Image (tube, rainbow, N blue to C red; front, side, top):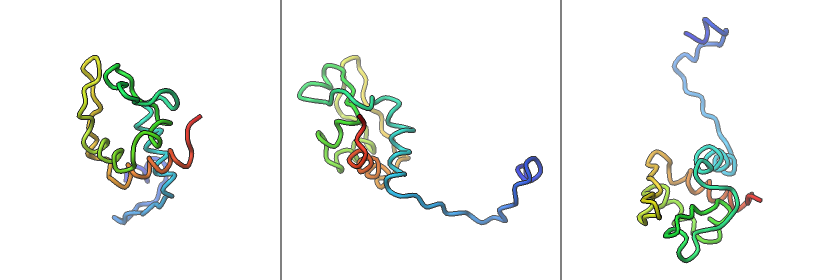
Length: 113
């Protein structure tokens, strides 16, 4: 009603509109809207002792250093390992497993440069 009154948008009449996106597009939105807040596009990965040195792995390193299932679990449960400085990756329980997998597939298909 607010939108109709102020901008002339038609009423939805209580119906939901399903908007479909490709897997790559869903992954792109997640990577660019959430993951890039902490992770640089390119740069070092975790490596042997990267987490202990406080290195946050780059998005480009994910497909080479982690399986899709590993990334899905990491997003769902957060990091179990403590980084130098007492930081760890938080859990994101509101991101579905399918969305996490889409972000992995996006990084495989469109690796950051």
